[in-house]
Length: 155
Image (tube, one colour):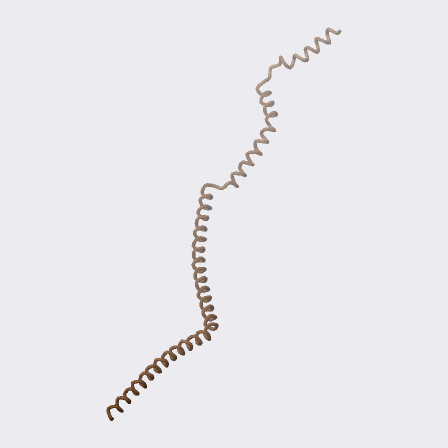
């Protein structure tokens, strides 16, 4: 009995190994084994298609690059115009400050300038007066000399 049991066990173990699989059996096994893989492949294909839809094409990239270049040029032109306006404003501010400073200095120094000019005229007048006095003194001395000469000639 033991021998029969051992032989039966060996027969059951070796039977599937010695059996020949048909083509349909192999296809069925492959379908069953590859079914989860096929589901994953389909999911991956969908993900790839979605990524391709999200990816920018070369034309899109060129269009964005062109937009960036145009925007940059516009900004450069605007900045140049702004710098020109700022330079004009700076010039106007400097002009106004110069006018204000000149006005302040005029208000402050006008009395001093008047006094200085008056002193200068006074000095010129004094010099003129001294010259006139000197000339007058010379004329008086010439007159006295002339008087003496005329008195001597009369005698």
